[in-house]
Length: 314
Image (cartoon, rainbow, N blue to C red; front, side):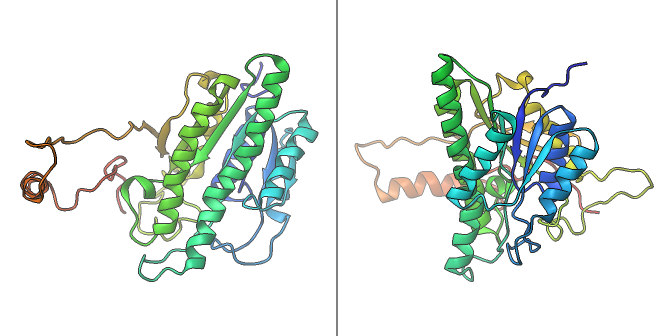
């Protein structure tokens, strides 16, 4: 039986642990050759010495299961190292077909306490890291398409977060980066569609070292053999699907996924519209229209999708 990703190659960033590891294993299970990227720092805040260990361990696991994999210990937020990552996939497998951007760190702090370094570092790893790898992958696909005289195969799966959708008081840097990733994704989808490439973003909920305190107190498996609703393995099948030929018509989308559920998000819609009775709004007219509108809305309602998943605390 032909596997869905047989003959294709993929890069998964931040794949040494947690969600990225599950995604790399799933792509390999579906037949792809995988470049397992991870900078290998032990701290979820990006602290500690970089190590090839985490990426190599996952690559060994894939090869032991009969798949093809090579490890790459590199910082995707470094432009040159991102280029080397894409070139490694091309040299190892002849071409690059799938890019899954997952690498990230946390530097949580309230907006009034956050330092410039804490802001810059998170934006650099998440948003610039997504840009760097996508830039070199896109150049590769564009060149291949020009040489072929038509569309080629390319898939980008980016990792956003509900911190962007619903807000996260202690993560202004992370939420901003994840919102930026959605903008990057939709722009990439528009720019690369003519070359045969799709780009989509997911907002996963998964219990990993990055989210261990975020999901502290949420329901965990109560019986032997029961799967955690927040296990990364609930997310990786969607990534496998988006990387496959079956998802050719899925482009520029944002999908929320966890625990056996996938939600396709709509673009923001107009909730209310007001027109001035004159050429230009007056202060009094705006006060009457907008204050009246917001006074009749729930005080905890904000722009976003806070009720998408309905995950219950244990």
